[in-house]
Image 1 (cartoon, rainbow, N blue to C red):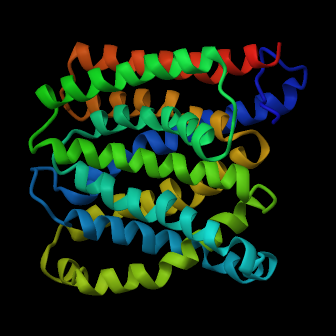
Image 2 (cartoon, one colour; image 1 turned 90 degrees about the horizontal axis):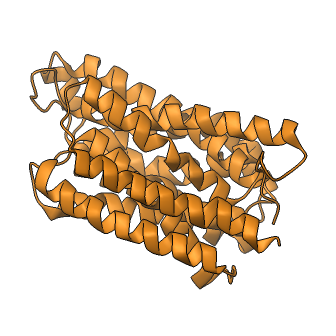
Length: 314
């Protein structure tokens, strides 16, 4: 497996390109957490769209944006061999996280949701080891243990500070990150021979009909008819769906395809920092213990991801 890391490899130009893409992607996804909040709530805290409606609109907009690429993508995929993997990516990488994150943010701050998102690389390591027979070095094991300890602290201190609801909102984010880790592992180890745009297009074409059904069952159109704030919130949802989902997914799949699942999952180093800064700007409260816990998670991920990979090559 070729990992593009500037400190360890001589192909600096390529490595630099994917680091820049990773940073750009972190800005997009880091801002997605506050966009979910802005999609659901008015400036005064009144709910405009419920969590299911925001998730549905997000998926529907992304599906429509990627639909023009669907025709050629469908012709290029091997239906019998790979459709099962596309279904996993579609459901685990897109549908479930969209609903889980919006639900979670009805009870926790957007910044804390972004912090919890840093658990994705830990799950990626465990999934790679458990299901794809990727060998773990002692450095990776130590890093995973440190990261897991950080996750426990993050959950504990998050329960004390950032919750309006209960544990189910935190668990929803953890499940979403597990889904993300599953999806990116499938893309790297089972679908890396496809173009990034094909993976993104197929994943959302699969979700087009389900998203329309949920849109109708949630009676989402009534919000536009009855709430004068609906279109303001819809602007945030549109950015979330078109840029934060469709465009970002294309970038993410491109990074996975050309580097590795672990390197791509390292976007979560930067996502929580962006999410916390934006959340703080909008008046969200976070404790010093939460921030410390987040950095313990990121330290564990750094040790497992980069130092572990470096040591495995010696």
